[in-house]
Image (cartoon, rainbow, N blue to C red; front, side, top):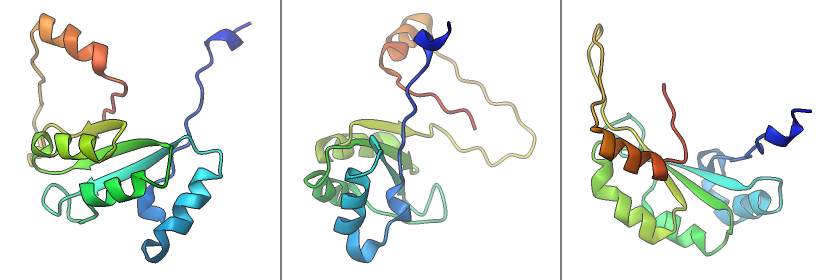
Length: 129
């Protein structure tokens, strides 16, 4: 009883943990492991202090892996970058909508019901931080 509702665990190593001097070796390691996803943190040095890589790297490594490419955009203008990452081979994209630099504040997300229902059909993950 209860086993029919168990969700499959997704193993998603992050490319940022790889040795960037030998990405091919790191990808081979992931491809031959129990991983089903590859997590790709994209940072623009504006939304967060770090700078990582862009769609060209994603496009190049896409040729070497059939893993699900989980692109996480930590960038100031995610909507300007989504198409580039889709074209580069992303299978899923998550992003931050807003960054608040306020100590005491409540944030609200306002969507009309029709838009919310349309969005829910396409949302595959929701992360509340």
